[in-house]
Length: 258
Length: 119
Image (spheres, helix red, strand yellow):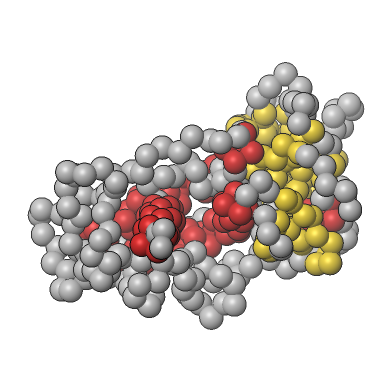
């Protein structure tokens, strides 16, 4: 299977900080001798180099769908990265001390993308709940009113785009309804004028009708996006598109057959 | 350049591509330190920091599909997710005075620290 190896090597060696780094002994596949390698953990990728100064990794282990466990081995401070499946491999590694072993086991077991995504979603949810609780008074209104697209906000003075804070819908779009079905509850007033957090907090809007994956292509797209329909950002964008379409239709009907 | 029809799957921070009738991918792109660019109609490209002229182009069936992919790919990297997490953590901390990661016992993890991961 082809892989963009240059990009992988770049990721391994660029100066972005590693989540863990150090020497580990790696048991060979065919021969069970252990070889000392320099390991670098970045994100969900565990790279290993022949030497610490090597310019390119000799291999990489993608840490998705695996378990990290201590293992019985003649070698001291050994642990294993185990993958499930018929053709899969177990990587046996050994650290040089108890402390190093514990540090590696901890950082490897939290390295997966899935884990990161779980934590992000949890925080997103907390933030969303807090925003609704405060009646939309805080924070998200740093964008120009009426703009549909969330704009990136700066956190540090980093030129990198940071995830946009979802905008609290402002009241000037008085026609916004939270879903298309008539007779549904009016949207909560989140106009941000003196948000008073009260006990009767408005509940988040109902989820949009579930979109069927039109093909495996579109359906698989956004492993990150499609699986979190409750993310305010996503909802906001979806509603924005629907409203834009409705408006377009309305404008066309207005022009109509002249 | 010839366009070949491929089944494309975004799984975590990898973009896998398959021949349409095969179960095993022919290739994958790791989506870290990459740039997603809208090209002409229905087309987007992926390029990487260390080789910016080399563009992997994808033509979609519609402009809408194209935008969906662009949005999904822009958020696909582990590094993007990490920045989101740090950002949300900071926001929640500002609002509540409490570190939301404490309850999970992961406050001290290197990967969640503000200021250490600038890329």
